[in-house]
Structures are given as structure tokens and as C-alpha cells.
Length: 344
Ligand SMILES: *Cc1c(COP(=O)(O)O)cnc(C)c1O
Image (cartoon, rainbow, N blue to C red; front, side, top):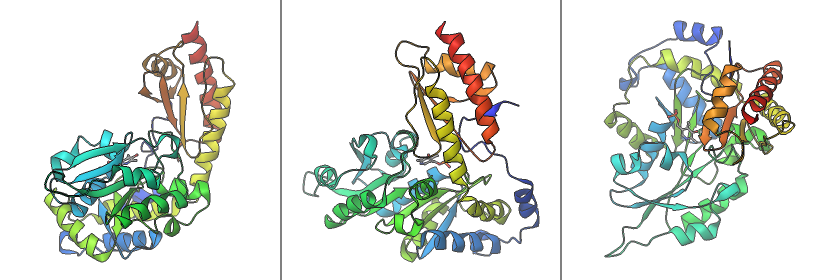
């Protein structure tokens, strides 16, 4: 079996999760009658201390529902240049919510400064559409799983709120940020108007994400989920493993420790470099002189280590629930051999 470090989504449900799925009490969730989904939504809301929460099939749908609920057709959404909602969701902001996207560049900080929020804000007028939403991301995926401290989230959110603009947090991996920074999730999302988090990333659930916010927001989100075809019936079957996934938050620290070990191992290899990760994403550079990421990924795969090309010379390895410390040590050996083979 190769060591699969392509993503933290590749984990397989545990026996416990499979048993929970089999035994889950279920009903028709579109009628509000699935007790397992109801329990998951209530526990998920508690986890981030929001009034309510909605179970959605994917993080993408959660983000797109949030954009749709918070905005009016034709408005602008302010997002980071490398954000998932902008780069990896098929232009859904345009397709599903008729939004014009305005980007800012946050670099390592990953979220905008208050100044960047004010600069990016567009006041509605006869000629201008007006800004309807600011979307933040924590951890920031494409910037290497950067864990953004709550103070930076607060500052951006306060700047947006002063302008009358709501804030959504794409928190696909928000628990990774919370564990890395030792911050309560409720504290992390205190100033935002909605948050999406994934149960199927890092936490090990086979399916599903959560969109959380006020009662009013979630009621409207439920309608948009239906509109997008996301109303599910006996969804307790997939929600039950999600309940167990919520118990996997604290152990994310192990993934972070494994990622730091992986990065340290990689930095000892000639021709490779990797910044010390905040969380579970290791970005390995083969520089401009080494193999391209595609070549490097192929060489790693031949040696039993799976990663992903995330830039011309940038390869990503993501530690996860199914990868042990011993696996990481073995992976470093495979990566070393791949580097030696491709540098020659
Ligand atoms: C993976 C991811 C999503 C989308 O989640 P899916 O469940 O794959 O649709 C959204 N935002 C970020 C930051 C992600 O990493």
C-alpha cells in the first residue's frame, strides 16, 4: 500500500464509523425527520457556538450556499487571490450567485488587513455594484495550511462590519487552525457571520460538511441547499460517521506533528525545501532547477509515496488520520530516493 499524502480527504472510514452508519436512526431529513442529522447539526452548532448549523454534502456547497444567502445578485464578493472559493469552485460565485469577484493579495498573512478590506470595499452607487460579502479562509489551503490567529479574523471582520458587509469564513480546516493555535473554535469564529467546516477533511468522515451561523441564516441556507439539489433524505447514514468525526478534533495535533517531521526530513534532502508547516500541509519546493512537480510526484509515486502537484515546482504532502509517524519516516525515505533519482 502506498503512503497516501495527497490530501486529508483520502482517509477511509473506521470500523466504528461504518458501524455507526449501519445502526444510525434515520428518517426523511427534508421533512426535518432524521434524528441523526438533527443531532449532528446541533452538536456542530455547539462546536462553534452558533445558533444553528446545516449539514451539507460538501464544503464547496457550504461555501456557495453562504455566498448566495449573504448577497444580492450582481454584488461584489471580496476574496483572497488564492482562496478556495475563488480558485477551486468552478466559478460558482458567478454561476450560482451572479457575483463579481474582487481579490486582494494576503500573502502569508492569509487574511486581509483592515486596510485591505477598506481598499477592496465598493460602495453601491448608480455605477458600482456594492460589496455584498467578504470571505476569509482558515486554515488557508493554497498558502500551505497557514493557521490564522483569531485576532486577524476579528480585525478583518470588524473592518467589514463597519462598512455594513457580512463575513463568511471558509473553515474547511478551521479545527486545524484552532488546535495549532490552541484556540477554542467558538473564539475563532466569534466575529464572523457564517462558517463552513468539513467533516471529511482531517476528521475522517466519509461525507459532509457543516455550514453554521444564526438561526435566520441557517433557515435561508436550508432553502438554498434545496435549490442546489442538496436536500437529502435518510442522510443519517452519512451523518452518523460525522458525529464520530467531531471527536477527532484534538488528535489533529498528531497530524501537525507528523507534518513538521515530514518537513524537517524533506529539508535534509539535497535539492528540496519546505517551510515548517503550521498545520498538516507540507509544501515542498523542487526549485526552478530541479524536477517539475509533475515529474517529482511521479517519481515519489514509483517509490510508494503519493503527493500532489500544486504549482510548477511545488508539491504538496498532507498528513492525515490514516498516516502514522512510522509512515512519515518511511515517506521521507521514499521522497529522498525520488529526489536523488530526479536530480541526477
Ligand atoms: C476542500 C476545501 C473546500 C471544499 O470542500 P469539498 O468538501 O472538497 O467541496 C473549501 N475550502 C477549502 C479551504 C478547502 O480546502
